[in-house]
Length: 69
Length: 218
Image (cartoon, rainbow over all chains, first blue to last red):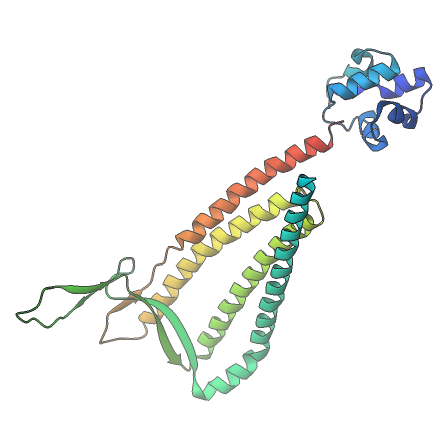
């Protein structure tokens, strides 16, 4: 997948753990883990908007396009 | 709530079907084991008395659309002038002392039972995943696809073998009073059934891909 989720960086900047973010956003830890490890095939706008709200960032701060090798 | 009840009903139905297929599987297995087990007894006892052979034939001239013209008594009251039997199919019952023919017949029956067991095993595996709550397991469309090809191949091969067997037998037995011909049965119902199963397998494959997408949507 050429789209990478930069959740690691965002969590580090905010000093949050994945479990804490999962609690705040209302997504299960396994699902958030799928997102963090770039295994997700799609992200709902509602999820993205909850993540942006809790991490105080823009969608562009969480997603990055890297062409496949 | 009603959706949960619907899912529960479907799972109950799948469980019931699986139990039925389990029973059918073990029954066919038992028949196969009994057949193989009784083969030496049947061979030795029939060595002196002879063995049965049943071959499908058509009654009359022609393999595809057999017809047999009948002689009818003509009198002044007769309304009908011509009588013939059309599409007459029957089973020719023969008696023989040929050991290799007897073994070939048994091998053919065992082969049919093996194919049946294979098909039922595939269905049982599909139902096992459905009962376990994973109907969209990636193996299921593959299993259904294989089942479709088994049905198609078996129906075509059965027609061909039936024709060859009846032709082989009819060249070795001369029947004088009634004309009989080797049979060609199209098994078109089974061919359609096989094609339908293949279509269902293709749709199921799409459904599995959609379920995977859904599962990996956060």
